[in-house]
Image (cartoon, one colour):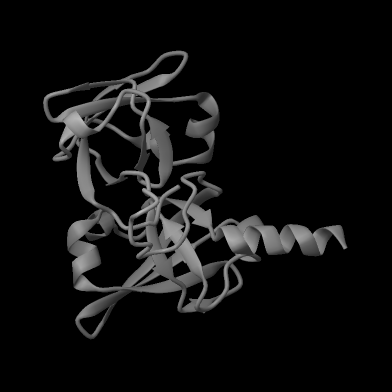
Amino acid sequence: MFTGIISDVGKVRAVTPGGVTRYEIATSYDLTTVDIGASIACSGACHTVVEKGEGWFAVESSAETLSKTTLGTWRVGTSVNLERPLKPIDELGGHMVSGHVDGVGTVKAIEADGDSKRFTFAAPQNLMRFIAPKGSVAVDGVSLTVNEVGEDDFGVNIIPHTEANTTFGEFSPDTPVNLEIDLVARYVARLLERK
């Protein structure tokens, strides 16, 4: 379980395709505190650390993960939002994020809004019913509050700190992003469907 508060921006340093795709990610994390088998959210997708070295760790992505996320587009040099899992004593600063990506959206527009920026994201229609104004959504693992919702898009406001400390500073129109809807919205919708 994660909170959507990014604690490092890593860089892909190696990609090895195969039956699973292996990614080595450079990080500033103290890897002596990261066990083999530990979870790290990589741009919103929960992954298991399978190997580590000085300043880097490796994860493997299945075909299922590659088909449901942006990871298939990652190359050497790709920036990756990183978050270690929530500990029972940690502050819950964002919202409950599972690290299970629901689909891929795209950056539709970026506009200045005072000292912050207004980002509009296009989302798959099957996810739009879960996205509500003032609700939560995770975009590339970043916990965000939804400002407005359209027919096939939603808007959020990004403060300078978030832009500087996540991959949002590298986004441009048409950039693909991983989307995870709010867990509460998912379960409420499921309960309503069963009635």
